[in-house]
Length: 248
Image (cartoon, rainbow, N blue to C red; front, top):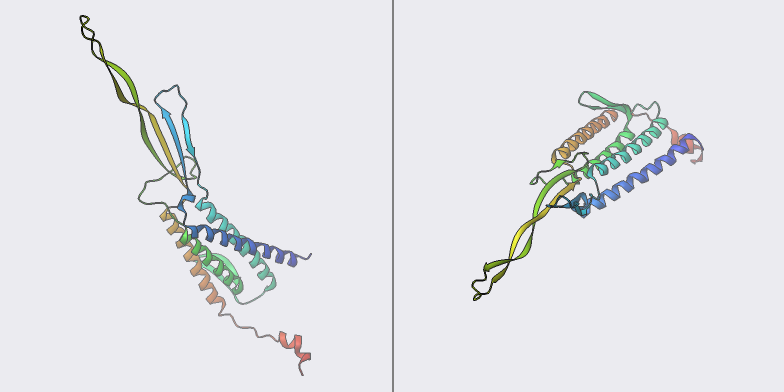
């Protein structure tokens, strides 16, 4: 198989991966299930230091927002790389090209307008996806856990139990009055329940910063497209040369 055929096969595969990524992420976000990004660990700690702590529940978030975004960006990167490689090979020497510039930084040199159009399509999908990603609840104070994987909230609730006991109210005296004993209850501390909530969502600031960067890339691509479209059109006669002898 030639290199061109291999690249076309890879392109088809990466296009499927990209489409699958879009379908999966859209399906997840359409459910609007924030709980899928949440997890909880609850532990009971007894006042008796000789007793082991008891883990009551321990769940981790089903999805991680940063991982989802990372997977989508990886699929997009692979598709753009393969598509642009084929386009560069097929259109080598094309004048309809432009640099992609963000601010004063040249991100990519001499990109064909066909590749630019593909990039715009992909980056717009990334923008839509990240714009839909839910963020941390700002009404609650989260901190990073030690490994930096989740945002966490730690809380504690005391657990009490009722202890029954008998108390002597009146002592036995001179053989005439019986002893009066009364059963009473007392509320005593049994231990505490420690709760750690884990959340794998991104912060509002992280989301805003990401969208701003993507917006600047989109603007740069659209400006590059405008510059590439200013290239002089090369009029060819390929159709006539290919089919001219068939015309009557």
